Image (cartoon, rainbow, N blue to C red):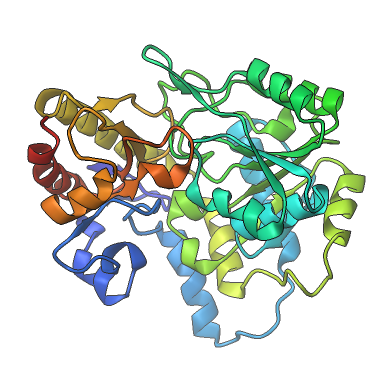
Amino acid sequence: MTALGGDGRLEDFDARFDAGLKRGNRNAKWTKYGSDTLPAWVAEHDFRPPPPVLDAMRATIDRGDFGYHDLEDDVGAAFARWSAERYGWSPDPEFVHSCVDVLQGVTAAITALAGPGEGVILTPPIYHIFLQICPTARRRQLEWPMRYDPSRGWHLDPDDLEALVQREPGAQVLLWCHPHNPTGWVASAEVLARIVELAHAYDFYVVSDEIHADLVYPDSAAPFTPILAIPGAAERVVTITSPAKTFALSGLRCAVMAYGDRDLRRRVRQAHPPLLLGHAARTGIDATVAAWRHGAAWADGLVAYLNELRDHLSARLSAEAPEVVFHRPDSTFLAWLDVSACGLGEAPASRLLHDAGVALSEGTEFGTNGDGHLRLNFGTPMTVLDGVLDRLVPCLRA
């Protein structure tokens, strides 16, 4: 598939992929389960970043200067411009600061806004690492479970949130995954406005992970809206995001925390010793700034290709494994598959790793509503996706 690259050239995403290089570079996705296994587990796509990102990193290497840096303002300005151009939301760069990765920022915000023993609301099935935060930080985990409807797919009902916070007055933080991992659901502006209204009414905060924001498909039921763009959100919301999912930069360790309110920013930043959280690395900032300044056309091409891959996955499953229930995600390169009718037992991912040689994510890792499900990463060249499906399909027929 050919798409417009970020530097104005035509770039073939598939042609630049080399599984051998991935394994040789000890890429975790491609090495964890051995060379005979096809990986479709961790949420990282397989495509090289656009040339401007690589050029920015090479420039730093060529200068041979890896000392302390003063690039924090560049990150905030690049993020503000990216958000304004793509989503019509213009954050104040002074209210944006870097952190090492999204999980660090999420954990820092939660532990600043909810004390030990206080409640943190999750939305299962949910990104499995989120399920580690409350037990390790000694916060009380509360759940606002997703609903499933055959016509709408997975979604959240704000009425359920209101009922929860009425029952649990100790709820201090909603950990919001926007867009949602693993289901790919994208909340509408109306849903976001209701959440902000409830946050004010019941005195809780929202910590919003928006790392998949750029990966929303044209046919999504709702476009992506940053929750900080909602009126009234500034006093109640901390957003954490990164270009890592869009541009496959997770190993470079750079994310941002964004605020709309000076007092909330001060509260979160002063809750931790200044030296505890550290700073993003120079190479991570170089790549992040280059991606947000020069990667828009490449990102558009990536989403177009992911859309083709999503359609291809849907068509093959429908034709060859009709027992699998798959509601096409509105965003991300992740497929949340209901395989409960396929006779794979209580641990379908383990069974398929053994029987098909494909590594997937076990649904139960994502908490409530995960039984009988798998998460499949389709962010890979079409030939690799077909190889994955060729192995899986015979095992998915009941």
